[in-house]
Amino acid sequence: MQLSSAQMFHHRWCAALAAGDVAAVREMFHPDAVQVSSASGQVLSGVEQIAGALEQLIGVAGPIATSGVESFVDLGDAFCVESVQSTAYAQVFSYDVFVIDAGRIRFHANGSIAPRALAPVPTPAGPTQGQDVYRRYWAASGAQDPTGLAAVFAPDLRYSNAGSVVYGRNEVIGALQRFWGGGLNSALKTVSRFVETPQALCVEATASVGGRGGRLDITYYEVWMLRQGQVSHLIRGLITPRPAELKQIMQKMADTTMRTLQDFTQASMLRNAMQVRW
Image (cartoon, rainbow, N blue to C red; front, side):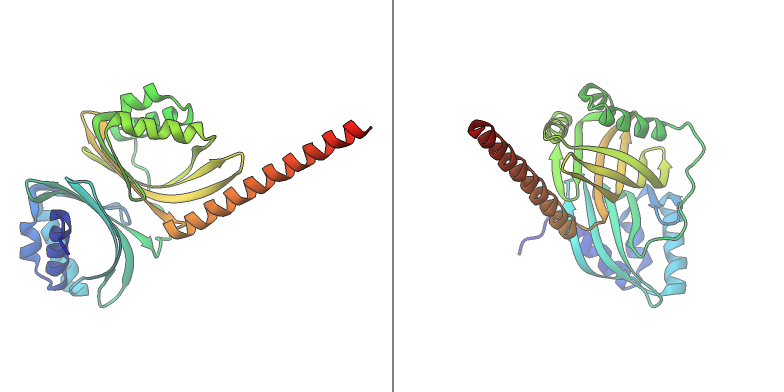
């Protein structure tokens, strides 16, 4: 089996954590890297802070073993992994998003899919650039406004929605227009995590998604990379329901919609037949 460069990089990462090799992990980060924990809201800037925090963690909890990789999404200069990570004290089903620059980690975000934290991380005081971009995105999405979205997205946008990857602003907007054209829409309900750095947003939120056939609340995580006030990367994954469960729910909703349509059609035909006989 041939592995991509992102997969090989991740294997090196996992091996270094499992060995408790802080020096090896340190060499994988760009000197000016930023690391964000969505679970705690902690932001570490620079390789020295990142390596120091990891050394403290391994000193207390021991090496970190990665197993059960459930999802791996490769966007070329970034990748997203959902996996089980274990120490001597805890096991977490987590997500990790890496942005790579010249073979080193420029940005790393980590969060928990399960178990979930009991208390939300407070939203930082605003207004900030990240909050402005986020609000403009949802305003344009709610209004089904492609021009508004074009102002938010960079032309070379890299977009991943629960493993479905689309490249380019026009292609992403086109996919959203097809979503709207199918009678579907999404509405933001709550934001439980919002961690911001000058170049990125880490968000966990719940949105209501659906249409006339029914609606469903979906809780998800997102990492937004920002460049000159526009989104260059938008990487989204599901927290609950998980992908397989969501597929089953959507199929049931589609079946219900089809049965409703069939019942309506049959009732209409029966009514028309009765009117003819009368």
